[in-house]
Amino acid sequence: MDFINKYFPELTATQREQFSTMLRLYPEWNEKINVISRKDIDNLEINHILHSLALVKFVKFTPGTTVMDLGTGGGFPGLPLAVYFPNVKFHLVDRIGKKLKVAQDIAQQAGLSNVTFQHGDVLEVKDRFHFVVSRAVMPLPDMVKLVRRFISADNHNAIPNGLLCLKGGELEQELARYRNQVLVDDISSYFKEDFFKTKKIVYLPI
Image (cartoon, rainbow, N blue to C red; front, top):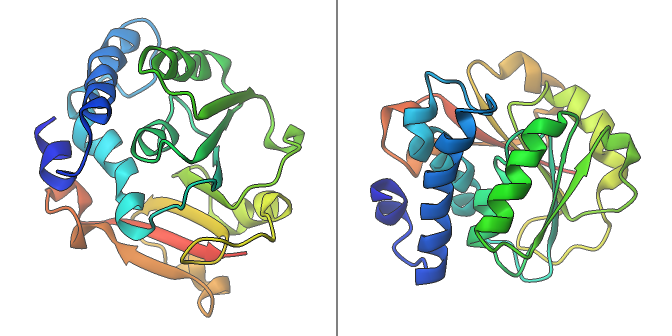
């Protein structure tokens, strides 16, 4: 919890306990189901939970906001965000049932009541959301084609509704089509650990 506490001193006792639950349960589950790379599980706090929480530094969702996490896997970035924003509703979607099972169990044990889950293709989702979030799921043009239909027209946050992606590496070619619309934010401006040197938040209003 050292890094979470360092960057988010405002957390309540309940939130700290929920993050502690995540830090305990993910390694236990990873012994049974490979949710996180076995080489990376020791970096759970920085590379997965803190990385997910970078979005908190970019936008503070208002109560009542709805967010879909597309390709959530074992629950990133959706579950850490659900802890931070207890008054925001998160819908976590993934095609891989066993990973979603892990996310469901961790959400239940952490006492998260603001999270729902859907196993299957995103095209089976019926609702609309203020934002869609994802972490290294697919190139931005492919993502935009998929999620455009899910973005609500009802804006009530500081930034317009749209797509928020956590990405790394060289993005110039991937983002070229949207260069007049997209905003790219360096996570290294928020978190100083080496892992974040090449990590970005990519925001595209839709």
